[in-house]
Image (tube, rainbow, N blue to C red; front, side, top):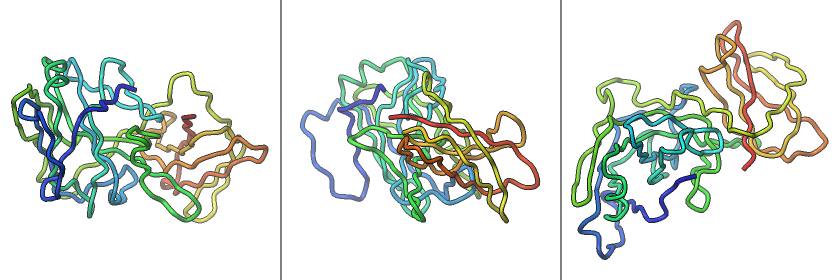
Length: 252
């Protein structure tokens, strides 16, 4: 995964360390009005990530469920687990001068991520682990593309910032390349929930659902699985009177 280890993040209004040799850095400020939401309609949880990404051609092709960029030429420059009260507070993404010069000619954008993981009755954003994404349920662009060079500061404009529902992580993460996917063994419906019995493969699994076989409308939080002998039961809210389901796994 191409994640910058040198990019810096300053959260405006919060005490921050002063970094030496930063006068030539590229700076991108951003915030959202909120409430921002996940694809299932729930409000973004505190600690969720907003990511600064870069693409050489101005078209970021998205993420796989393991958190890696689908297009090897795209890059995650910086990830900020800063969501608070259903929005992105004012933040300043700071890209070191050398890296900003390397990325000259491409375009940046800010994305809202869905990194929720379920454990028992608790759901929380996984965010970053040792500075990297451990998993990805879904994502959505929250800013327009912009070009920023070294020595420059710009504001990333929120997309359709006047809309009442805020930004949405509406795109489901793709199946990671070369990652075995589990077999769904059975399904039952109880009340408003759908229970899927799934082959137990080690990693993280989430259920996606939709109105057709592409099953691309919404996804559940990820569940960590241990690869043991017992099957795994995954729970998804029933999407109306009919729908299609699939399970997406990553094995980081």
